Length: 51
Image (tube, rainbow, N blue to C red; front, side):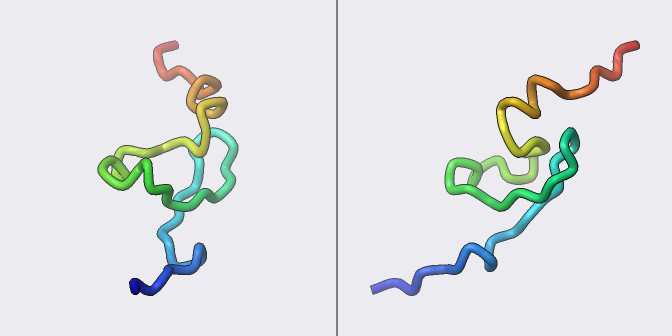
């Protein structure tokens, strides 16, 4: 039997849009370095840099 990890043991990042911390999710296991936003809503509301 494998030992389960606590949620506090997972890495965290700060969302670029809302500024709130979010933790690692299994669906992000292969692309964690590329994840910048905590949710789809924040990703859609990102500030465009092409002004």
